[in-house]
Length: 156
Image 1 (tube, rainbow, N blue to C red):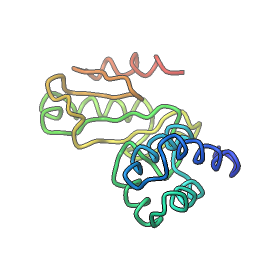
Image 2: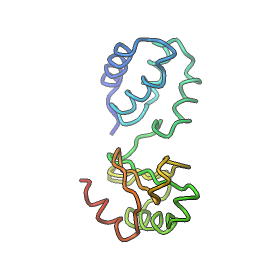
Image 3: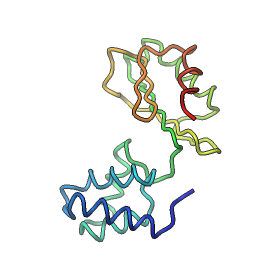
């Protein structure tokens, strides 16, 4: 459930105060607001735009470019799956199918209960231990399809 407008403004003001209302702090500001709220609602982008004196279109561009940011609510747990060639060759396709089957989700979807969001990444930079699954900030390397249920069971 999205936070109320007052909480959004409080979060934005606190983050901007911490970083300073400077354009060069835009990505850290967006990242911290995204982490605090779970995504970047329209009200947050509008207030950041006003405080930092940057057009909302620029903020939206940045927010939609970086995968760490989202303009839509995400689940409590975000699963990022690497779909790079090294992960694919190491069995990533089968792991991806196992994750999708286990959660009943496709790329970019959030579960109805708000627990999971599933997204792919072109590369997570962990090619030496592929296939790689990132759950929130936890990295799992050399994942096999049979490990998927146990990995997901760690998150309530």
